[in-house]
Image (cartoon, rainbow, N blue to C red; front, side, top):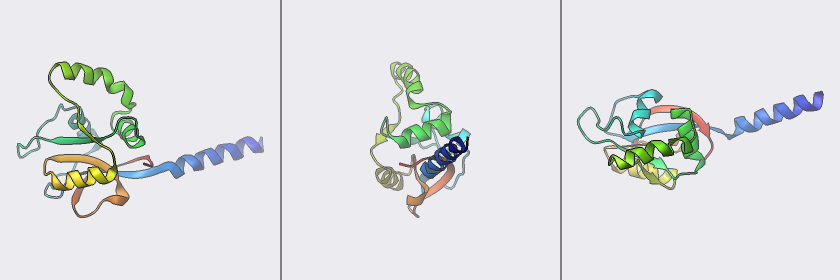
Length: 141
């Protein structure tokens, strides 16, 4: 009985150790704030324009990455694979999925240099080059 409890506590501690705070970031010139619910339509390309009329450029991490899986669970409450049918349908309507970048550093640099971009990075790498619009808990990168 005690062994089972110890194993459960160790599993919970390991899961907590893998948790990390993530930040959804935009170019530093954008001052708007968002909720996680505001982010979902952007990444589905249902919301395509910022308030000033500029086209939104959402940036994803690579398919299959822990960062992307964690983001998808936090924003859509599903796994990335469940979005495949949606994007297949969108493709035939001429809508392409968000661009992908391989690392958090690449996302941070891209968002810092592109005023229309939105992306997600570990909160620990955020600097003054971007503006945080929302935060969520996810798995370590």
